[in-house]
View (cartoon, rainbow, N blue to C red):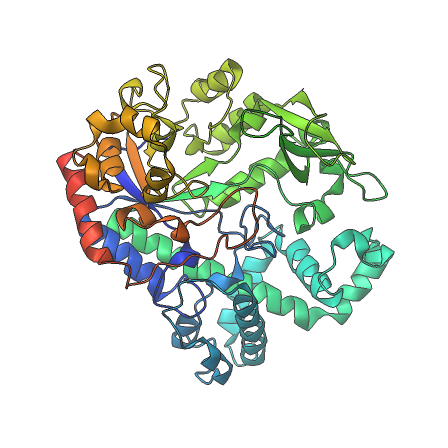
Length: 498
C-alpha cells in the first residue's frame, strides 16, 4: 500500500448524521467528506459496505458483492429524475436526530424505494434504460444476488436451505420458470444496486477531488445464508444435503476457554485452486473498484485457518488447515498491476508464518494502542516498539470500547503503566491516546469518531459475542462540537506532519 504519512477517521456510513433512518450515499456522505477536507484529514475508513444480517452486522452479509440498500439516498434519486417527489411514505422518518439506526425502519425504507423506483422506471428515457441494461450485463454477481433477495422475501426470510427443494438446489428449469414469472421483482433489486453504484461513484469522485483516500473492509468468510454460498456451493464446505461439514472460528485462548465459533462454512480451497481462485479475485476486484485500499479482515486465515466439525457447538475441537494465501495474494497482485492496496488485519495470536506472508507482500499491519499498556516492555503495540512506518495505528477499532470507556474500565495498576505518558492524568480524555498515536512512526493513524468526541461505551459500535445494541450507533450534531473536534484532530495531524 503506497501512502504518504497521513491521518484518518473510522466512521461507518450508517453512522452519518443529517439523514432519515441512517446515513446515505447522498448529502450526508458529501458533507462528511467536505468536513474531513476542511480539517485536513486525508483518510475515511469504514466497515464493509455490503447488506447486513438481521442484527445489523456488515460482516455477515447475505451478499458480499452487493451494496447495502440502506445507503441509497432518496433525495438524490428525486433530484436526478428517478423518483417523483411525492414519497409520503417517508413521513415516518422526519426525526433526523435519532442516535440509533432502526433496522426495521431501514428495511421498510428499502421496500418503499424499490417499489417507487419500479413505478417510475417506465418513464425513464431509452438512453438511461440502455445504460442500466449494459451495467447489469457486466455484473456477474447481480443475477444471483437479486434472485436470492427475492426468494428470501417470498420464503418468509427463511435461510435458503429451508426453501422448497427446487430453489434450494437451484434446479435449472424451475429457476428459469421462476425468473420468467418474477421479472418485475428482479428488476427492482437490480435497480437498487445500479443506483447505489451510481451514487457511490459520485462519492468516490468527490473524495478523489478533495484528496481523501477511501479505506474499505472485506470480511474473510461469507455467511452460509448468502447469495455467494447459495450460488457457488461447491466452493464451500457444504454437503449435498446443505449441511455444513466444516465451520469457521478461532481456537480457545486467554479470553475464551471454548474459543469462538463463527459458524460460516470454510472454503474448499482445492475447488478455488482449480479455477485459479476466480471467485476470490473477482470479490477483491469488486471491492477495490469501490475504495483506494482495503482491509482484509482475519488476515491470518490466509496462511492457515481453524476448521471446526460442522455439528460442534464450540470451537474447542477444531484443527488448523493450510490456506493458499501466497498464491491468492500473488494473483491479486498481478490483477492490480503489481501494486497491492491491501491492509492485513493481523490482530490476535499471530504466528511467524502469518507475519512472513504479510511482509512478503509488504502489506501494512495494524497496531491498537488500547492493547499496549500491560507492563510488558516487549508488547508489540507499545508506541516505541512500532519501529517502522508500514503500520496503521489505531486508538481502538469498531470492536473495541471507546477510549473513554477503556480508561473508565481499567484497573488502577494498569493505569499506572501509562501515567508517565499522560499529560493530564487526573482528567484523562481519549485525546491523550490520539496524541500518542499521532506521534508514532506509522504511516497512518486512525481514530474512531467516538474518540474525537470523548464518548463513553454507550456510543460503542460493536461488542463481540453480544447481539444487543450493536451496529446501530449514529453520530449526532449534538455530540459536543464535532466540527471543532475535527479541526483539533486535523491540527494535531499537521503538527505531526500527517
